[in-house]
Image (cartoon, rainbow, N blue to C red; front, side, top):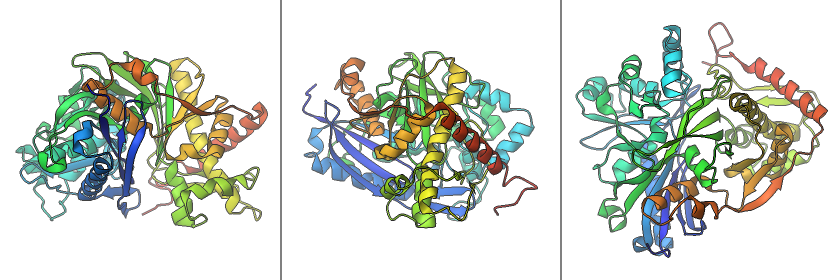
Length: 511
């Protein structure tokens, strides 16, 4: 295959849609980004308009294709997506029947509580590798079907049972739209985030479907991560282009970081923070609050790569809160200079549990807490506490990961929007006591989707070619005394305990 072509990658995220054109050396030669509306119908509930997702993704894709020299240069398309966000649409018209329920939403926490109270948590953990939490897609599907649609329709469950509706995470929805409604499919990495998929048998699980009350008629076909799913409708780009990879954004980022060997790990600083450790071809069960998830599958009927994952719900969103809620900074990028203007937080801790706490706590009823305030506390101390909160949460995850895997991480590769923040990465290295490595190209989610698509069509011949593309930008070495690290970690633990269960029954309410 000609190496002068390009791979188009669609990186559909929580707050924006992006597109990039990637060349054979892993360079991004064209890029575009468009934000879309975030909706907060009630405390703890987050939704998106699926049409806004589609419109923004299509617009940036076309912009990049034009900037890259036209559709004739595009060899294949790879899609990475915000993972557990749930969309249900009409198969006949392609129109969504309700707003998308975003992965951050806590709206299905009561349904998960009921399943847990009925004694089913161990079953879900054993088959799916996941905690029984509102984070995941399955309960969101049932919620959509049991509530009126955007047009007021109350017959969604009957229509789903009749096969008239389709479910998909964002990858599936984009695939459906790009192929003109001809392909309804997902990949194993996204399927593994639903609470409905047996990660050992690689199949939808009938017993779990019954427990969550999701009809199998709405489900997409599940395929390998790297492989041709279909072609774009000619009306999209002027000619058909193969769509050759679907991957959840965090799995794509792990692949883009060339974490191909067991024991290699990456952390993505995005809206949330997501630390994934490659565990190889055998799933590792977690005893410390982590998730066992599928990383990718490169060949039909080939081996699956598994990972341990720690999911932090609020990372970049905590900085956005400083910007949009407190208005102490004008741009997210301003947080570094403000935080660096003081040497410490003065004993202040922020726990950004705005939509509960993820790993390793899994507390949907936790809420944000700002503790240790004195009259000397100012915007700078709160800004530094915000950066430290991100690093503390990642440290919580890594401690659990070390306990589960019985191995100490030698280095942590990082990426995502906040990875440009040198102060954050130094704090992270200090709190982990592990070197942190930032690659020359931090858009590793987009790179991972591109690499997975390129492998499927022969654009890259194997993992060694991709591994050679990874280049180090900067390495952050730990520089904090052990006593100070321990003091900060103990203070963080105390702050977390004060945030937990805040919105639970009998506690002060956020409704």
